[in-house]
Image 1: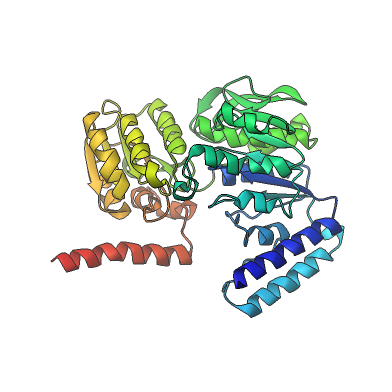
Image 2: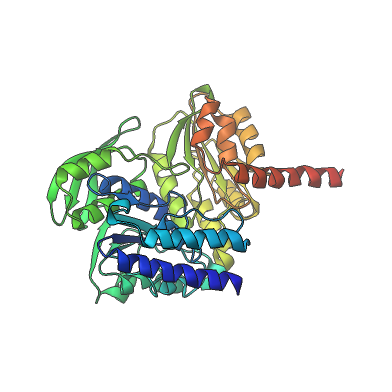
Length: 435
């Protein structure tokens, strides 16, 4: 009851805020994966013209999203009545602030764990533009089917003034559900209304290519990201910027300032001249497949895959992990290292059948120690897995050439360090019990 009361009060404050500041534009970002990367890309480009507000983390729940929209910090103790009292006081100040103090654009992620979560946002939000980044398996213990996920994520289209859908990661059959709404499409691979078309790639420079925009036509640009799937958030940013009146020069300038987000296809220097692809923020089947496609295209004297379990797949977990096992290629990898129960149970045996040498690590630290002991000079190493009980950023940390680069990794704050320390210590306790 306490949480519901707090949430209802925050939603009312957000409604009053937009009523008091009707000129503020709201860009909402929904989708199974890619929300944070898309949000940050959109913000970077729009900042060439507009004053933008966003939360750089993933505050996208019914309790945290209103605070992110209002630019108010989440209370340190969410059970404290007095801390929420201070939050409400800050919200009232925000509502009554002058236009000069407030942003011109707010960019907000909308997350979902259960059916109906996205629709509830529509009770108090009216986005000027909504993006749907992807429809892939998520929280399948609650949704049950990919069709149910599609119904949920596409709900945002129904209460937004206009929408943009990533056509690469939303199946065409699902777009039929919203064909009667104002919708445009973005992505990669040609024939999209908004896209970035790569012509050349350099691991130090990024992609050199061409922007395609419905409003602005085509023009050259470059962007320093890695992997074709990393260009889809870029295309989303191009689409929003074009719709919001930015010029070609402003878009080009904004794109040049985009850099990889921590834990999302970030290139780092490793020990013994190795190259690390840090894609440890989270993992879904589509994201892992995209990462592997990029990984295999890069020339390297040797390759090592570190694959963690993919969480929240419910009854689909075995099948989806087995599909990833089928993507492991013994002719292109020296080692496949698995971390987590489902990765070891379902990816490892199929990877072996595919001709791969496989090491089933007990945790991310064990994986890092193993890779460091078995890698060749100049190896290309991809680390990809979900966050909960996987934490492959700790594998990357062991492999870094310069430990100061650890600040570029995900989940390095004190709270996460405490969580991870307790998690890894549990393995020591298990071993002690076994002895």
